[in-house]
Image (tube, rainbow, N blue to C red; front, side, top):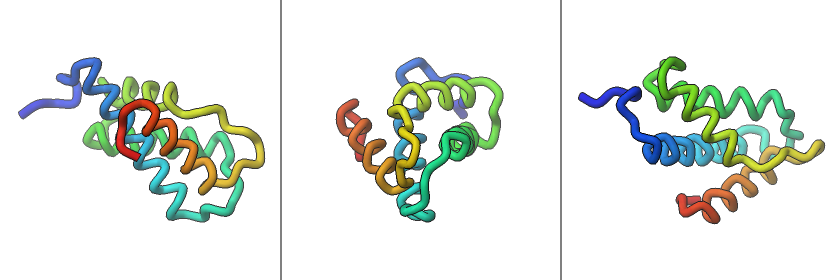
Length: 99
């Protein structure tokens, strides 16, 4: 059985896209009109990477989280969670991922 630490760099990028999509889904479903704080964004990305890495933040979990953060656009103060989720989907579409 393959382990998360067996991932190749392209697998990490695909996992990062999955994390960004999961974050977009979460932001859309949970209080989409509230303002998104940077700390909350970091927690969401880290939590989704942790789940994708079989609840481990060792090994590639950190790489997945960092790769996902590299994909997300700058968060402008005052941006609503739902609006930011749409930006995330646009980034995914522009980078060849599903949105």
